[in-house]
Image 1 (cartoon, rainbow, N blue to C red):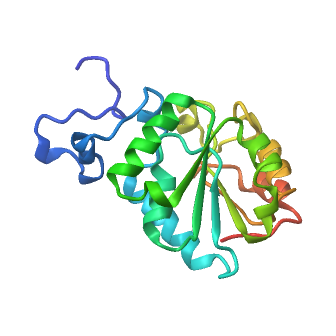
Image 2 (image 1 turned 135 degrees about the vertical axis):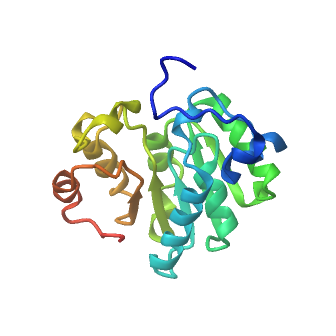
Length: 200
């Protein structure tokens, strides 16, 4: 294993593998990108709980705009908080993985799947749900380089900047929750969020 950084983990025994990624042996499907992009299960569950506790009861629909292989969408469905979860993913392979994974967790029936660009789908197909919805977005951060930044510049996110994301989604609902690097520039986030409803 020469040349690997301390960020990389190698497990010699199944007992050393964290429980949150053992379900892979049960048939979980992942794309190559998902290995570094999927929200770890304990984190996804914590995010789902946090939203469930902080969102007004009148908001019964969760729209997951960058669903990937389903990590967050599945956690939202498992929380039992939402009447319906809508999951949007533009990568067809990732979406197929997400559907399969949701089935393994027993929540496929609680999630409606959309293949395509989340900005267009939210605007053209889900806009009428805005009054009852919270939009959740765990957008691409632009690759693993974010982990080396002391303060992550949200204007450098690729392929969508924080401004692009908030401007588009706030036209549907002021209730937007973002999953961003912990080192994100909070001043930039505050400036871009000005005038929107804040979800703690």
